[in-house]
Amino acid sequence: MNPDLTSQIERVIEEGDYYGMQTFDQHLMALFKAGLVTIEEATAAATSPHDFSVLVRQAGLG
Image (cartoon, rainbow, N blue to C red):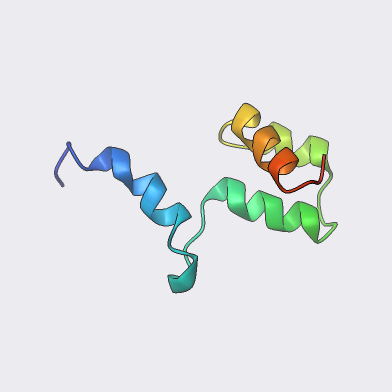
């Protein structure tokens, strides 16, 4: 694996929903939208709680 390209993996996954790919935080968002977890649970479990909070605000959910 090329170390210069590993930083691009998360971006590729984020943009790969057509192929069924999603990041952990994207799945947490789906669980939150479905009412299966609370915003507090999702934020606490997120890879980056700050980025997850931004994602929630951008989606108009928080």
